[in-house]
Image (cartoon, rainbow, N blue to C red; front, side, top):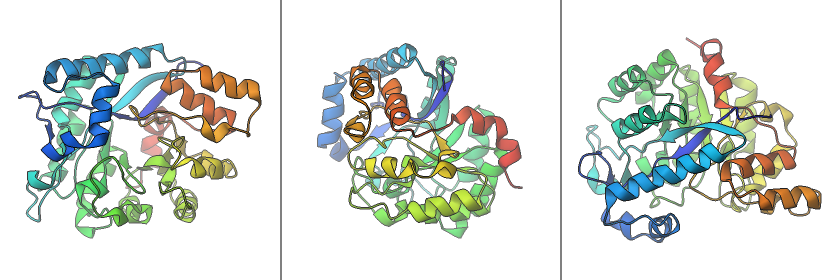
Length: 327
């Protein structure tokens, strides 16, 4: 794929609460080593939230605009945890990036950003929120079941999945183990739990190409192959596959051209993109090019192409969603 045509479907919008952006970070999360590292790495002043939020955006915009391959990024929000009555459970929510903030940011930079809202299907107004966000121009809905404490296979969520199908909003779900947010029930990261959404006709994008995320073995590969065969409206993104704990899946995928047809480009920005997977597997000149590519969006392209892993852009899915969505 040549030229600046790609959409990165997996870019996190990070934001500190500033009093009116509707975002929230728990005290526990603020003290976590990962969050402190993020603040340090991006030189974000935690005591000046508005300044920090603008700097994060400016850094992201700078890197995106400098990319040779990637034209746009889907900014991902993060919904909270909801109780049995469907009300926000702030005591168990570590991190919340408000949908209105995501959509407002995407509208402010229409040439660079698309809105990836986050809707926990456990919330009382989940279906209404799908329609509200669709009307406001959202591109997809992102969830992280491990941290948002819900089971995607719960049949109570069928109406939610049908609303996504009706609105042709792809459902991007985290798959595998989750490290960055304080751990909860890791079993809900099993992609098998996404079958209900697929059966209800929603276009599903499994994050991280269904990699397990614990280095040892890729136990979800059979599910990934089955879904590709069974559901024409199933996709997986390649975000975070260069991380040491997920690169085994990256190497596996080179042997499955039928899966590569369903892979979508993504990075998991602001996480780093590594070139370890290419060591000893590509020509030295190719490796040197990867190492010299400092832009994370471009390095993701270089590493995957260098390893003969092909992928598509989210734009292809959006263009063909009408044909691929079952009613």
